[in-house]
Amino acid sequence: DFAPKKNESKWVRIAKQSCRFLLLSSFALETLSIFVGTVTGNVLLGHGEQIAAKAIGYTSPLALLKHHHEINYLTIQICFLQGLFNWLGAVAIDLLIPKEGETKSARKMNQCMATTLVTISFWITAFYNYHLNFYDDYAQMLRKYFKLVVQRYLCWPLRPMSLLYVPSTILTLFMMWRAFSSPAEEDEE
Image (cartoon, rainbow, N blue to C red; front, top):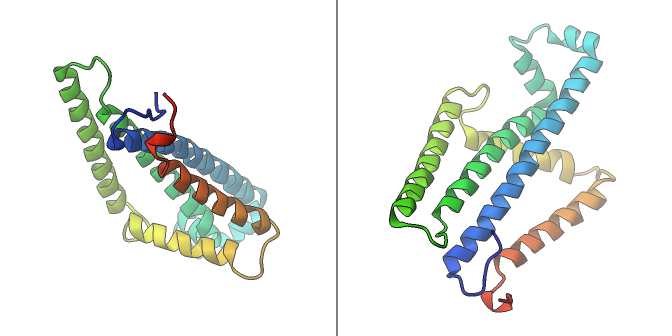
């Protein structure tokens, strides 16, 4: 049960909210990764001869993809990896939340598994950073991605859909702040 209760400590309430947020955002990020990957694949397959002609001079298909569809490439890579991290983080947080009737040995095992998942996340990041193409590390990928998003979706000329996704994003951020700052006194028993 991820619903915070009035009588719970502040850290348990925040942990439950964070766990729920991470699980749902993990699902959204993985879905976005699949969607963008499918659309990008269709774009590349739908322009076969053009892509084949453009491929001359590139050392790999990924180099072609990065050059012509970098924001798609980064969206797929970042959403998949961040979705995985969010899911691992949610499971780790859930393991750390005290459960009713939990024995001391079960509590210790849950803490062990939570730290194991955090350690695995560090190993995944190190492995990913070592095997990256085109970027030094995951942080550089994120910086490049946000720069491209701002250039493509938030700068002039405005896209018609920006009239919907900009206000929607602002509303989402406000609702997130409101959810995480909700005091225990507002909850019913």
